[in-house]
Structure formats: C-alpha cells, structure tokens
Length: 248
Length: 114
Image (cartoon, rainbow over all chains, first blue to last red; front, side, top):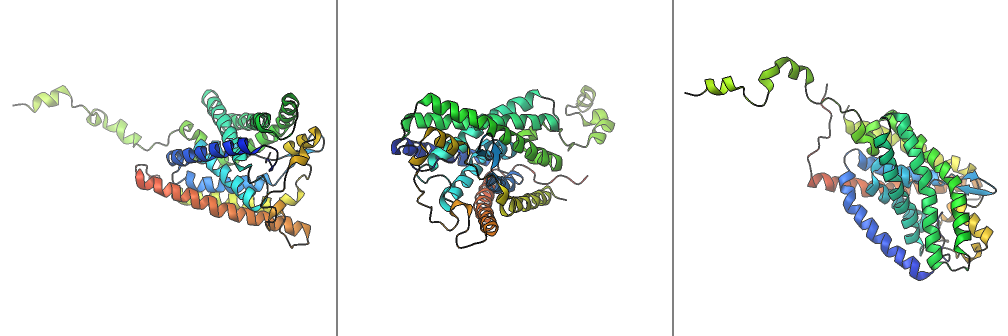
C-alpha cells in the first residue's frame, strides 16, 4: 500500500508530512513509557521482522498481491507508541533506499501504515483481550481481528487522502469500493501473519508481548509460604494488647 | 538466567528468521501488483505514479543493482535491508530505552532467583 509520488497532490502530501512529523514526535515522547529492558530490543526486532515480511507479497484475488503492513503486530508486541516508531523506521528505510513509496508521499505512508493501523489495531486488541479468556488462543484470535481490521482502515485513509488531493479524476465511491474491497482480503493475510507471530512469541516468552503483559498471571515475588506461617506477627498494625503492654 | 539475556535469545532467533525471509524466501514472493497498484491500474490512475527520487538507489525495487543473478540480487537487497533496518531500529530503541532507564530507574530488571 506504499503510495508512490504523483498520486496525491503537494498540499495534501505536505499536510500529511506535517501530521507525520508531529505524530512521530509524540510517539517518541510516549514510547519512553513502553521501552524497558524487554521492549527496547524487541522493538528493534519488530522493525526488522516487519521489513523482512513486507518483502513477502502473498497472492490475493485476481492478479493482486498484498503484504503485511505490520502496525497491528508492532502495537501488540511493543505497544502503540513504540509500534508507530518501528513501522515508521521501516517506511523511511524503504522510501530512502528501496524506492518503495515516494519521498513526497512518505508522510502519507507513515500516516496510513504506521498511525492508522496502530490506532485501529491497538484498541481493538486491548478491548478483546480484556473481555476474552486469558488464553493463548484467545489472544491469537484478538491479534487476527486487530490485524484484519487495520488494513481496510489504512485503505480508507488512502481513499480520504485521494478524495481530497488525488491527481486523477475518479469518483470517490469507485476508489472507496475498490480499495476497501481489495484490502479486506489483504487484511485476512495480515490477520493470519499477526496471529501466528504473536502466537510464536506467546509460546516462547509471553511477557515479551506488551499487549498482554498486564493480563498474565503475576509471578509470586512475595514469599507466600513465609507470610502464611508467621501469621499475625506479619500484620502491619500491632495488636491492641502489644500497644497497651508497651505503655507505662 | 537473567531476563535480559533470555530476551536476547528470542532476538537472535527472530533476526535469523528475518534474514532467511528477506534473503531467501523473498525470491518466491508474488510479483502481482499490490492492492493499491492494482486498484490504480483498474481505475486508470496507475500512470500518474512518478519515479521516486531514490529510484537510482543501488537497492531500488528490492534488487541489488549490478547483480545479474536474479535470486542473488533479491536476496542481497533483502539482507541489506534487514541490516540497515536493524542498525537504525536497534540504535533508536536501545538509545530511547537507556534514556528512559536513566530517568525512571524504578523497575527491577531481574527476576529473583527462586
């Protein structure tokens, strides 16, 4: 879904560039809440993995291919702000080194494939993960749905940009129908790749999936056995007898 | 084993998988136009696309320039992209993470040994 130069006019491309710079700046600030010893290296890996998997176009209907966008996966694994940064790094490398996505369209591509995908996928995933049972398969299902929805959402964003600043003269409804229709199928691929990848990380190290870390059973850090055997002595408030006995 | 070291085992496995996908499997990817390009072709605005200013990059189009062997050209471009992305992304996120730990050094980074 990388927009080349020439599809969208300069004013809308520049406006998207401004939004992209502002959003990435905000994400840089917010990411500090998400980045710790575990998420920082994972975020590096997520960016690399998204770059690699984006090379793997899979066929969808009638002479059309699609590839992972990765916003949903990134958000689920390393959090929304860090996820936005990870996808943005990939898009910048692709635009600068691989001529994939136009330079003037870089802002548009960051808005659609980093912001929109993450901002749709993250609340969908978290909403589902909170109401579903806390199991690996439920979280994989939530990952599938989040990934699936993120792709037509990005297609909708493109349609809006094209409606405002498209250089061609096409009816918005035909672009809308074609974009969303095609990208629902690509979204299924996105959902499958997202679910399988999240499933693999859950199997190896569930605590490396930031999107479910607060839903995992808490490791028992407090010495439970000691607490139960010492009983009243461990209670924070002294018993009335002790207080009275201590008085003259 | 510290949490930190075992994270790096996952990272190592993930990077190896990424290198294989970008360096080897990518050759077998579908070459059909992607969703947006297909829509642009069908509706007739594909020709509005202009060549990117970076289209003379040695990695443009995910093929290393000057390499005649197709499979090698794609694989080399993929590996180069993985290494470039890794350098940028690990640099950025480890730096942000370290800056963050300097500011709020409150969370323990090791599990207590049971």
